[in-house]
Image (tube, rainbow, N blue to C red; front, top):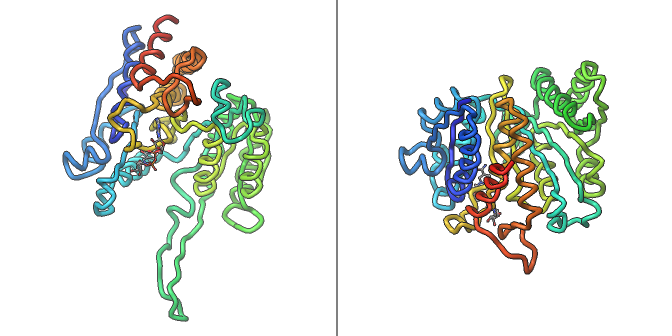
Length: 357
Ligand code: NAD
């Protein structure tokens, strides 16, 4: 197993260090892993003037998986666009053709009170949102700002999906549902957008290959409502890039804890990039305050989806549940009056549970 490790900026290096402790537990048990670190984001701009240096891209291309921390920071916001840290991540996603973005939103029972929704609405919540990541209106051409015949400026973008782009992410949706509660909800806006009429048609065609999965369709405006009204009705949601962008952020906030949520972005070969959903948190960087659990849970996803070791994924997820049950809390998930632990104490606690088991 070859893993490229890209820690990035801000809290990235701090939380990736905790994820590496978890990996070293498995290495000591004899799991054969080759880890190679590389620069990305602002750290790479500082070192070589490029947020995705060619050496880093090559290391990612030859790896089975990329473990990614976070990138960005206010000191990079005024750089020319091509040098901004985010460009590095976008280029990496595009170069590896990471078209399927998997975002679980899970409420751990101990943290149900952290949600802005009532605990009885969210407790036990376990949704997986699969967002198509390389197509749709974010990439469609033509696009731009022009002056129209009336002499007025107008902005325009193109919402476009090829059948093959829909089909491949739909397969991911059905296969993920097969591993879970076997329910897939496809989200579109077919009543007004032709490209999403095609989305619905193609997903329905793919469904024939998965008779064990129950497929439903929902319009995106209704899905946004249902996610706050009764989120537990969902198992797996599959949707296009722009709807998925918005719905996955909405769903993750149901859990109330940005520092807990991992993500995976995969290509057709099963190669994947694994990262927390949060950013580089410059406001708390270097203070030992960051919650490392989203990064550690990203390692679990890496074992499940790219490295074919679901057993190790299960162990990591169980260890995280156990440290929460023991009462360990970083500042972001602590309730008033609860004692707070540092990034490394939280990581060490997960390692201790793994070593015991
Ligand atoms: P952010 O996710 O970094 O932080 C939002 C808030 O959540 C902050 O208060 C932060 O302290 C807190 N937070 C985030 N992760 C945490 C953790 N693990 N533990 C405890 N608290 C945590 O979002 P932002 O402040 O809008 O962006 C900061 C920088 O990150 C920007 O430069 C942005 O461009 C970048 N960013 C990068 C990614 C990425 O690397 N994929 C994603 C989003 C934002």
